[in-house]
Amino acid sequence: MEASLFSQYILPVTLALIMITLGLSLNFGDFRTIFATPKALITGLACQMLLLPAIAFTIASLSSLPGPIKVGIVLISICPGGATSNLITYLLKGDVALSISLTSINSILILFTIPAFVLLAGKMFMVQGAVVTMPFGSTIPKIFLMILLPTAIGIIIRNKFPHKAGVVEKYMKYITTILLAVVYLFVIITSNNENDNPMRLYLRIAPLVLLLNVLGMSSGYFLGRWLRFRKPKLVTLSVEVGIQNSALAITIASSPVFLNDTSMAVPAVIYGMFTFFNAVFFGMIVNRWHNIRGNIKYI
Image (cartoon, rainbow, N blue to C red; front, side):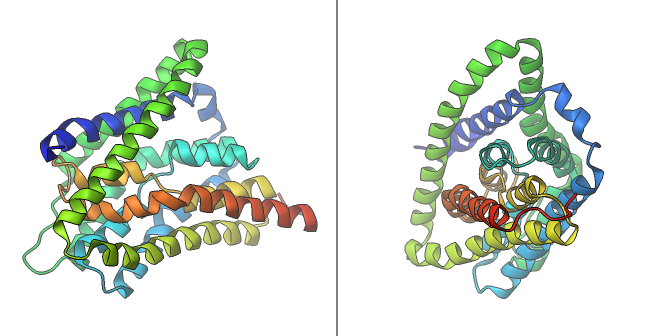
């Protein structure tokens, strides 16, 4: 597969379909719940926008990985959870309304947070002479067109044709899963061609992105415990802080419209391979623990 075919067509189409699928899972009524639980909402946003990036910067700073890989680790931390985190929250009997609210707001805030954090990571981790360019003026409209607009289209379809939207969403999930597998495969092949010992690099990256995932879920959970939230909100905070949109991170890293560096996408590929199962396992532990201990005086 040629790089131009991948970057110009497959990558943006995959992301657009993923975001449309996310929109198909939302309706206008979901947004009325955004301010119903402001304490949990603010806590989740603070964890997603500040705490998780801080963890990612710390992990990247302490590692001896190449600069582009470090930028890729930070990039994962600033991409919102998306439909996957909403699905896991539902499966684990979390607060789905809170999950959707966090995803919705975060998807808007990334217009500003992605350029800001990526530029900071570039200045901190790239070697002298290597520049990470992501100017606000040109990046914001690109993110809007590639992320927010497809999501809005999905929401409109869901609200105008609710019955048909459910059927479309079902098939779209299969299509996007296949396309995402193609994206993962391409990034891995490209990385293999660019590295003399790719497996060694992957084995160095894997523990760090696993640590990012586990620390993200743990921070959301324990901060929620400290604030005395009930189990559904604890599950949601754990999932929303721990699960990030790897497809979005891969697109931002690989697309010539943004960073145009597939090596920055490698952490997101490795991250995306195990985070779903980690989150489900973590959520099952939380549910089991609370079933044994019971909810005492939580809000």
